[in-house]
Every structure is written in C-alpha cells, then in structure tokens.
Image (cartoon, rainbow, N blue to C red; front, side, top):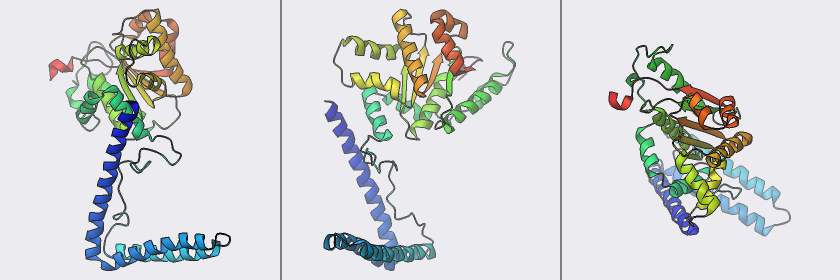
Length: 327
C-alpha cells in the first residue's frame, strides 16, 4: 500500500514534467518562427552532442583531445545562439525547461538518489491528510496578513498596543522564515488566549517554508500523542505509522499547535519532552503554539520541559480582543 501511494505521487511528478516540457516546446516554437536561425543552431548543437558519445565509443583509450575539440565547437554554437536571443530581445533562459522544483527537476529524487524534500513533503501531505492545512495556507499567509485588524489602542496594562506587539511578532516570524537555513537554534513559542492570530501566523510560516521546499509538519499536540500511542502500542496497522512517528523528529520544522489541550500525565509529558529535546539536540527547529501562560505551562509539565522551552524558544505573547468576534 505504501508503494502504491508513492507510485501515485510519482505519476503526478511525471505529469508535472510533461507539462514543463510541453510549455517549453510552445515557447521554442514561437522563437523558431521569429528567428529560424535558432532552430538550425539547436539542431547543430544536438548533433554535436552526439559526436561526443561517438568519439568516446570509437576511441575509448584516447578520446580526450577529440572531445575537447567537440566541446569547444559546442560552446561557440551556444554563444552564437545567445547572441541571437539577445539581439531579438529574448531572455537567455526563455527556452529552458521550467520545473516546479529545480532541485530534482520534478523527478522527486536528487542526483544522490535520495528523496527530494518536495517529494518528502508530498508523501507527508498524503500521509497526514493535510488538505485542510493546505487549503488554509492558501488564504492565511504573509501576503494576506492584515496588521490593521489588531487594535492600536492600549490593552490591559500592556506596554505596547496589540498592533504594535504584532508588528514585532510578525517581524520575528518573517525573520524566522528568511533565516531558516541558518543553524541559529531559533525556535518560537506562541502563547496567548484563543482568537488572537496564533494559528494564522503558524500557517504563514508553514506556507513560507513549504514554498522553500522545506519539510513542514503541522499537528496539534493531541494528534501528535495519537501518533505516538499508535506507534508505541500498535493499536492498528495504519498506512504510514512509522513515517508519521519518525518525521516528528526529522522534519525541517515541527509546529505543535494547541499544546495543553492533550491529556497531561507522566506518559504524555515524557513524550512531548522527548520530541522537543531530540529536535533541539539535532538542531531541528520547532514552533509551539499554546493557550497556556508560561506559569500554566510550568504547572502542567515537568520543570525540565518548561526550562527547556524557556531556554531554547523565543516566547512571543499574543494579546488583545478576540479577533474572531472582531471580524
């Protein structure tokens, strides 16, 4: 069954490549009509490429000089083609195949043979049935984020207005996405009551990183514990059981939403700590979103979990009126 799902996704990748090649051929046809000489050059370049293989086959022991001669000829042809494109105001990359993922050229696999991050994300999306999140990030992202819905008036003794506070929070969130590749040990803790934009901002970050072909897992704490229990006790033999569990530790970013809504006991506390601590040790980044205050987190979880969160996470407080009612 696992293989069937992979085959389905790889078939989708094949269709992506077909679309990319078809689009390239349409652009190529337009260019050939406008500048027929480019068609002739492309044919000559193609034929010259065959000569390299021929030279190696005919002289397997001393083909280097002949191959160099052919390559020099090919470079001159490509230069001539570039000049023609430039003279006719056609971008040099206009005739290239434009893939959705440049890393794997829409094959799903890197040159090393490893799965491309985009394929891993596709498998994860299928495994986690993330369609709801995928739909959410289409409308909840940094481009649609409206800072003006946060009131710019003082709020219950806070130094900054809700809007001023969110300007700072969003700036940190955008920096988190832009600098995600850096090994800076940066993790985020969003806390505050419901209806203040925590989930929206998590979706913004998820969208920003998925667009960068990063592997993003977004699950509630309750769902994460379901996955852990299924893995530990094998209550059922669901598809992707092992992958569900493993990628909690190995994904580029894990977003734990609604921390504190799960049933808190020794087992759940230890499992949450294990996930967070392992990711911290491995340098993998995590975002935790919770309705609990820092004191409530301390009361709910063990001291070592709480101290680890405070030590390695940037705490960002969300406050203001419930935006669900404001809307």
